[in-house]
Image 1 (cartoon, rainbow, N blue to C red):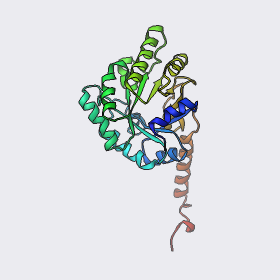
Image 2 (cartoon, rainbow, N blue to C red):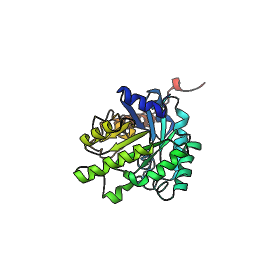
Image 3 (cartoon, rainbow, N blue to C red):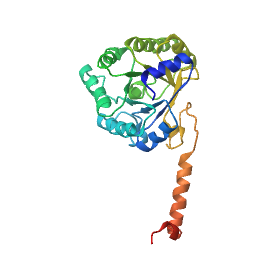
Image 4 (cartoon, rainbow, N blue to C red):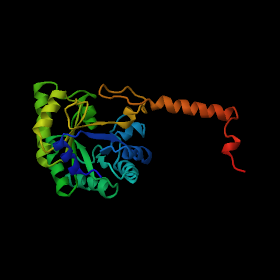
Length: 265
C-alpha cells in the first residue's frame, strides 16, 4: 500500500509518481486495481460529477460523501481529499476541524490545500494535528475569479519568484508533496530540484516533476469540455458509451433485447 512516505522514497529513487482523480467507488476500483500511486478526490467533482461551472460551490459534506465512496474501493492507492473553497482559509481552528473530517469521516490519508506563503500557519496547524498535507501552487482553481480565469502562472520573473517562494514556504512547513499546476516547465524543474524532500506532482507543469496528475474524466474522454493543453486523452469513452447506449436502445425498440438466452424459465 502506498503511504505518504512512499512518495519521498519514489522521488529519491527517481521513480515517477502517478496520480489521478476519482469521485466514486467504480472508477476508484479500476484505478486502484491498475496500481495508480495516488488517487485524489478532487473538488473538480463539482464540475465533472455535480455539474457546477467551477469548484467554488463544492461543500465539505459533498467532499466527505465522495471521499467515503473512493476509500471503500481502495487497497493499494494513497487517498488524498481536496479541501473545498472557504473550508480552510477563514479560521485556523475551522481549517483543522474540516481537514480532520476528511480523515476521520471520509477515510482519506491526507488533504490537499491550495495556496502558498499565506496559508503556512494553517498548514502547520494541520500537520501538528497529525493530518498529512499536500500543497497546491501555481494555478489554483479556487482562486479563478481572483486570477481572472485559468491562466499560466509564473511566466515573468516577479511571479515566478512568488511561485518559487510559495513552494519553499510550504516545504518548510512540512507538506509531504506539492502539486504544481500550469507553470512554465523550467520553473517546475527548478522547484523540483531545489526541494529534495518534497515530491512534486505536475499538472501542466512539464516533464521534470516527480510525478503527474490528471483529472480522470479528461484523460478518459468522459467529460465534454474543451480540454486544457496539458491533457493527453488516452481514450474516448464518451463515444464508446454513446455507441453502446444507442445499440441498447436500438435492440430494445427492435425487440431484439432481451432474448430467450437472457430470460428465466
